[in-house]
Image (cartoon, rainbow, N blue to C red; front, side, top):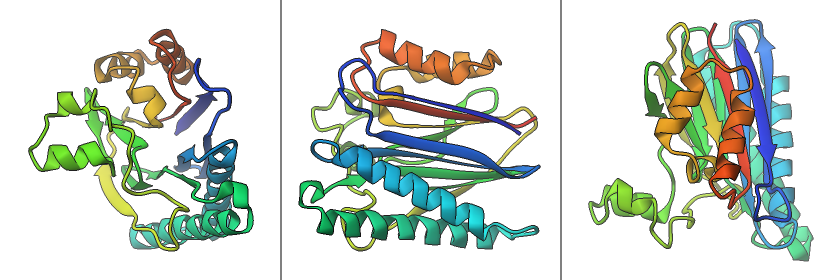
Length: 241
């Protein structure tokens, strides 16, 4: 598998509160994570950095040959739970960071399948011949969509679309959602922060990913900036050979 990642502060923010990482766990397996921090001053940047570092270290140290899918989910759960505790504890001991938190979306891709773990509104997408959302946002507007009160299109411009209902580090405990999906030869997986999908349409994301451009992550970030760049932007792309 091939992977590439890029992050950018965008055009309107003075600091990048997104963090990301991606690395191979073995010749057939890639792990990736994106976190979008929230909090005053630099607190969001601290939250996302702590989360990415904790999760990456835990997944890397806990990986072993022949690990089962159930054990992968358990490893991801313990890694994200540890990150939640680390962010939460840091906020308690640093007054300027009280209330900070971060979204998280993490993925393990191995062979013909992938597993995601997430909390918040950072997303994972699967590309075959079209773009398929793998995760569902934990957000106020997603709840309205699920209740049939607004449409998906209305959610995109709703004034409270940035209000998330779940995040790492805000509370002592965190609920994590998992998804398992099949990977076909040539499939691609994108994980990203809302600074990408709020400024680049799914049609344009699909077009870039289908193009096979090795600089697709950079291209997506450039497109988000060209469309306003109103938030931090992060994209990780993993390609099945």
